[in-house]
Image (cartoon, rainbow, N blue to C red; front, side):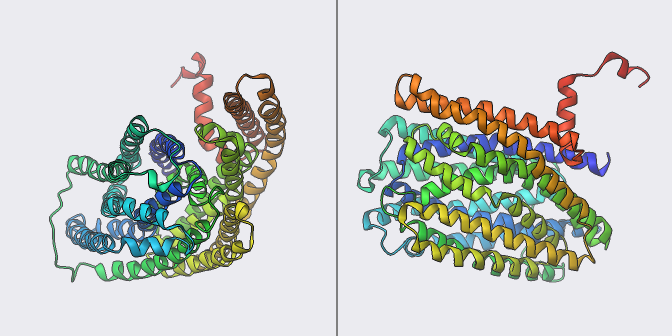
Length: 549
């Protein structure tokens, strides 16, 4: 199997798992919005969920990925296939996760104080603390999932890692659905929550994350992997790994500071305005295409980049970087444009339990975030290229740039009226992604002796041009459906939901069809690489084409 076909196959496996998981994640978030609405109780839940989830995102997106895949790829060339190295590295990681989790649990009240504005009401603060005490053990299992998943990725077994979150989301959905069945929805006041209600919501989170991690033991066992706890850390090459971990931890601290500013700004919003839950709901929509497309492609490329970097094959690394950037441009730019055009129809359709005003507010935040989606993908590619060289120092400084721009923008958001604060925070996020991506690609080009970005830039420009007719036609079709159809439909809520869903369906299909057609006509190869096999299957294979095979 060629490198390109292997990349396409591995990307397809991960994309399929990510797609199902993301769809279930949307269902999960819709249930959360149905329970809390745009309320203080919802912001309290969002803070509690942020604490363990933030650690997971930073570990999975930084320290663990940065350390394990390059180190394991190098260790697999040893006589024992890297067994001694992996045993010691996993032991160190598991002990570290256990210590972090045990330290974080008693610090929950302090952490809630840090992540909430000083004006956050006391009853909402107390509810956030109650949620977080039950949810905090998920830190260990988030980390365990990331560790075991990267061992599987280094062994080029990608499927289970991308499909395990499906199980987690199923558990969450069952828990949230049970909560709605037992206690109802639209519970926005913190004093409405009793201990059993809190335990059911937060407990579902922790159990789901635990099962997500533990299920990865099955493919590891089947592959012949046997873990033997080993505490002798000297003499097996962990010095390089510890240096990488040190810089990634420093980047984690910088990221935490930016997230703290974000959370405090969002929890300063007046009750009834878009706050942290609204922002997090929009961020979930923002991360869906990133996880489905960019992470899937770059994760499949990362193992190849790590091996090329270890072998000193700089041209191969340059090729992987350019290819990754090209795919990001051709696939993520249309998501950005189409998402901006159809954002309010999307949020009204998904968050069916929310009022039209709330759904529209979520849509505006999503539009602002999407402006930085392609840049976020490019930033991600640059980060992973540095990690392939076991260089976490450059990503640290990139994180400083990203977080620095975001913090400055976030602090300026205090000057904006409460009702617009979440949108301006989203704009600050988009700006920080653009600046960090530009700096990251420039630094990486210097590190690799130059990147041939001519074709990449051409792909990005062509992709943007191909989006223009698709966006115009989709918008012209979707707008009257969403805004005029409710007037002739019975029931204001049902009318708005049906018209928004229909506008999303018609506009989405139109946009995708016109973009793919324009991309093929403009010879954007990265689109054909992923869409071509699907189109050929839909068209079928003629009998004549089979002869002579």
